[in-house]
Amino acid sequence: MNPVLVVAAAVVDDLDDPQLLLAARRATPASLAGRWEFPGGKVEPGETPEEALHRELREELGVRVGLGVELLGPDDGAWVLSDQYVMRLWFAEVLEGGPEPLVEHDELRWLPAGQWLDVPWLDADVRIVEGLVDFVAGFAREDRRSMGRSA
Image (tube, rainbow, N blue to C red; front, side, top):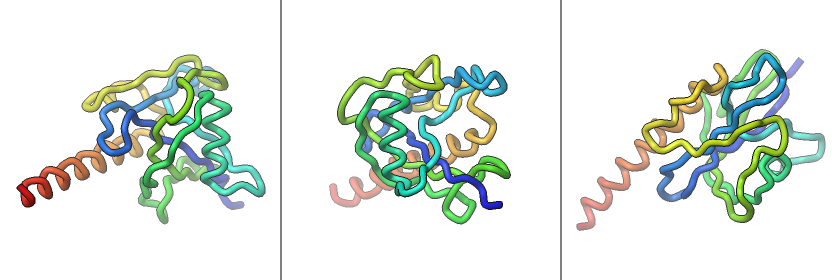
């Protein structure tokens, strides 16, 4: 049996210079309650992954987002979460609405850069957060180098 594809967003304050990352604390099921994750969910039949992500963020957070780049994972471009689930994750920026914990979550928190790993993430999400930190740090280094060459 193939794993179920889920999609999620690393919602940041600014796609060009991410300083804040939105984390969502699970309220259900009891086995996951109190742990933090990326907002998102399952891709329904007939949806593209991107369509599913837009739908999930409307349902879970009440927002419309713009998608940035996909953070490719080490598992054929995705992130294996378990034997049952594989995830794809995109950077996203809120375009309309203010994020609220509408479904499955009881709290949202904007984590400042340098503190993205400071909440108890779901075990499967920890390496993804580490990947985000590395990606953003590499992006910032490249940006500074190119600015230095053009100055």
